[in-house]
Image 1 (tube, helix red, strand yellow):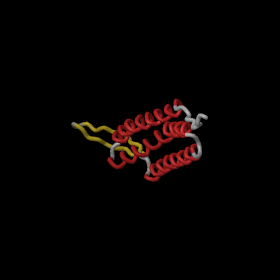
Image 2 (cartoon, helix red, strand yellow; image 1 turned 90 degrees about the vertical axis):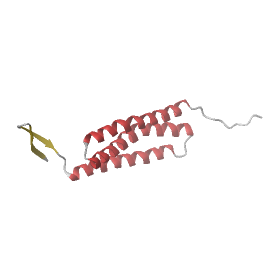
Image 3 (cartoon, rainbow, N blue to C red; image 1 turned 120 degrees about the vertical axis):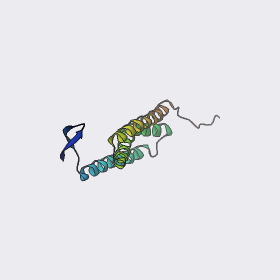
Length: 124
């Protein structure tokens, strides 16, 4: 929806236009992001179930980097921005959350890559 506005300031009037999304469009975008997040978590759980600890670290680190960090931080940030009524709050929160989750995923992935497999063989 395109809305035109007038903004009077010091005997001058500024004309501009603002592009607003409809209420249903924002709900649909959030639902799609949550669906992708849920499907990614289910896929990661399926890949890591019954595997070694090293494999679990690698799978969950990759999932955190590729799925949890972008989609979770975007969803939380957009909901916070809508609640506060400020887009800059949403962008600021996203700039904080995304690198934090990305670094958590990177550390988890590196732990999985460099972890040595433990062998429980008894010496006879």
